[in-house]
Length: 179
Image 1 (spheres, rainbow, N blue to C red):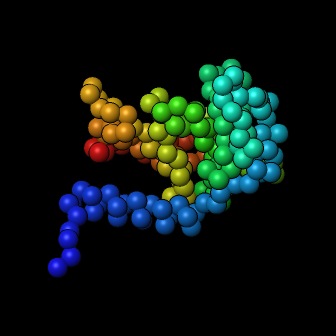
Image 2: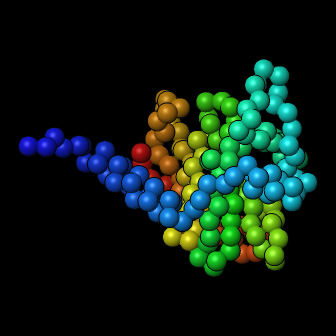
Image 3: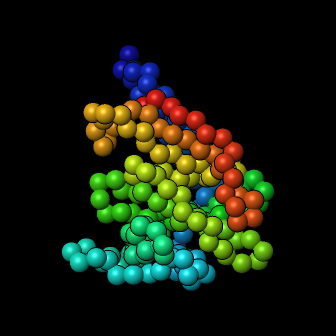
């Protein structure tokens, strides 16, 4: 007799497997050359040196966003490129904060009008931002913490399904789920 997982664990594993399969078929990782190319198309995001005490990594690019309190490193292996339902190409570059919150922001780029354009920042007020492609949309998951929640274990998640119309991010749907 096989041991069985509790229902909530089995469901979470099934969702992760399905989500991974959908994301793997809908998105590809970026290369360092692609990341540098995306960054070269905008003056809103600048390549900078890490702050004192942070050791630079040759596999990442350290950036800051002009006019925003957003900075950190971009790992091309974590960046995604994919297509929306309308066949518009989208590139997402999560910014690793270097702290326990991991990713608080991601840069969003698109190919529109024959060229790469910076759309803006996808934020998470609580860190632990997850962004993926699924069924021709951008899927964003952010944690919702209640008093007493550990950093690893939020009480719930906020989900969004987004798309682009040109260079404007449009929210299609949002909802919360219990963890």
